[in-house]
Length: 125
Image (cartoon, rainbow, N blue to C red; front, side, top):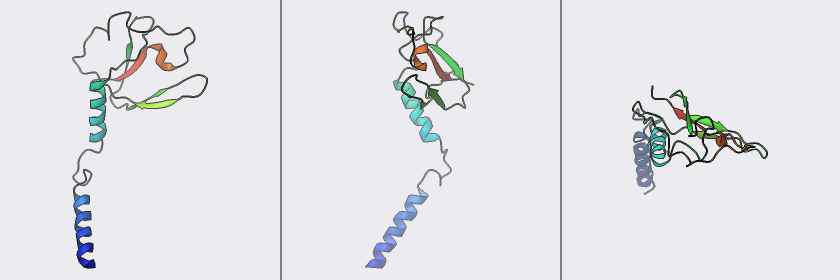
């Protein structure tokens, strides 16, 4: 009986190791890319603030190999790292994010880097 159970466990363990994506030669970042695509499809690329000189949220284009961004906060430390989910395609729309007046201006004393209205977006190349 013990041999029977041990053989079943061995077969199940071998089946699990063979069916893993890394054993099949799949892209190790495929799951991350799928997550990024789903998040980018459901959330906007910009925040609630606009860049003062343009009156719209502004995309700061970074290389497509960049995957993380860091936000800084003054006062109580809230320095955090976030993934870069959004990537512009070659046919990205040229008008701004929304109609003017839909966003908040940068406060007189900003307390976070997200309040400047410049948001990182990966480039299409």
